[in-house]
Picture (cartoon, rainbow, N blue to C red):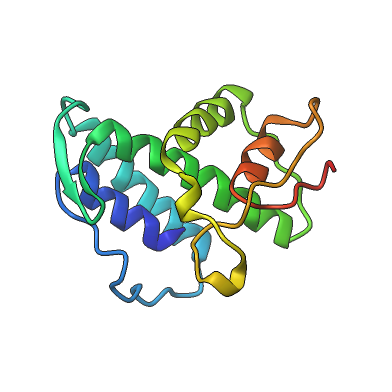
Length: 149
């Protein structure tokens, strides 16, 4: 997530993130480094201007709004991952999760999914009950097994 703040800062500034580049070393204050990166990222989005402007990414030309939505989804899902791995519960705003899920349904196509052995970046969608919390519905779409099941 710390590396992601730098990658998304590059995209917000109109540059091309390099997701294959090795992440910079992280010191002992992970939370502090994330907060510092997040502050720089927020400032980059505040300067980003017209979000309909296109930028070049490895997947092709996309609008800055596509990248902003991707970032929101990624930060929510990976925050869910971190909370789950550390035995915590998250309660994200349902509106943020719903917006991230709407973006993901248009961007996370079936050809990007597969089991772990296939080498795909995303697992199959996990079914959730209709009344599952918004953050669990989002995590399930990204192939995570929500705790509410």
